[in-house]
Length: 110
Length: 253
Image (cartoon, rainbow over the protein chains, first blue to last red):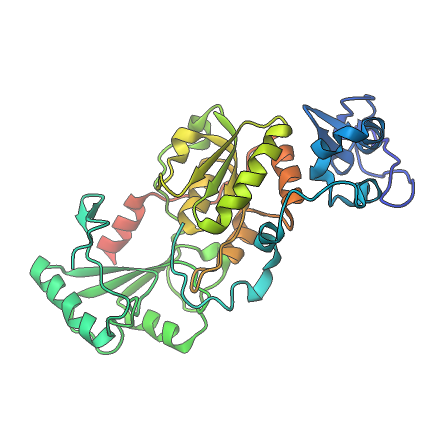
């Protein structure tokens, strides 16, 4: 199994030490799970995803699922409106041992 | 009192009591009902003390068999005393390591009959279960975004429950982490991205962490859903049990 050839990092370029799991759907280089992102119907490497966003800035809204992805942090600063609201994020806020500790009267099952 | 909304389920009449009823008023009603039916066993789901505490204290009715599901107040003295008091109890979620009392473990039971291999081809990429109001708005914003990722998505609101996961056959389920939904998905080999709902007794977060996938933002959910839909593998199964296993336990208890 070959090594992942992606060098894009969150802040700095570096060689990835993970084994590759597939090839980039755009440039065909071997990449690992960490360095794959989905764009449209393709799975591409971080570099190709960044290039696509830079090349097609008008299409950024289509890539908004990368909005809080640390690999794309600089690509999305204040660029697009957040499609989700506070109530949506609140679904993910509560966690751990104190989850719903303030709930006194919700008995429903699912 | 017979419920006008749920007159019958699984061929069994349902009797619903008002939440404001006092335990000492409800208790003789339960006993009278057992006597009228000639019941020799009272099977209790999750609450060995009774929903309103009507089964606690000295008991003169038929033997009690408690089917225990994860509760947040499992360490409370009142709950432990109630478990000790019943004639038999079984843990339906032993993998959550939630119960201090030593009772037999059975594992989760589900209604599904198909195995993952019988489940076959997935008819749908993502099924979003918006079974309550706070999930509905989110699902409406999530749906077009998943479609933009090339995924086949369906949103089910709270009007068609219980859900027939065997018929819908999604590859990924997005929804609450209640007992039935979680273990039915797992039994069918469906990935479950959990949105744990706050409950007073049911610990959906604990179940979600142990059995399903937990994410920390809507964007992480989108990424994981797309990733799971494109992956070939299905989640590992937890041991599954059929209602017959529970019936056998109850009869043998």
